[in-house]
Image (tube, rainbow, N blue to C red):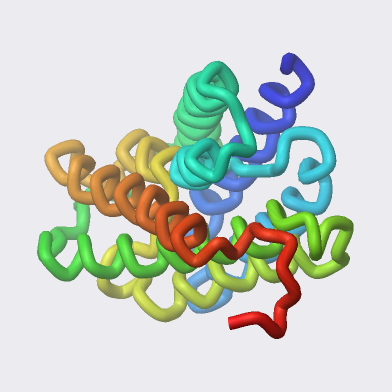
Length: 216
């Protein structure tokens, strides 16, 4: 359990740290930011997948719990370490950058809820299918698939919601000053509901069964 928590903390830290470094001025990466974020997530998933499952995201952990692949104690432990690591990473980014943005972007609640829900659902659904199914166990593409969906989501809906898709990143964004504390509920609700919804769809369709893939 200790090794799993440590890996989750390390992975979440470097994910949020990278996000902060590429989105906060000075030195923001602009249009290349999502590429850096997707790439670091991919490599971190490959690095930690065999130890902790490489969730780095409380919404993913919730879905894996609903999938029956983790215990309630692991769920709570992962959540604590993920959220603390995200906040710590954001704090270090602020120190390196010399402060956060002066203005916080405003959001449209309905559009932000929809954008965050849709791509958090997509992310979690991909994770469940490429990283928790025995028939594809040991595949070489799981990290690439997970990193790629986050990169795609950041490009697709980043202008709408910021492309967060992760409660640990949400906490980090508040610390960074790129998100208003009053808006945090919008992101957390969308992300956690999306994670639960992805798990429910996965379970309903019995996608984790050992049936042949040709069966409908």
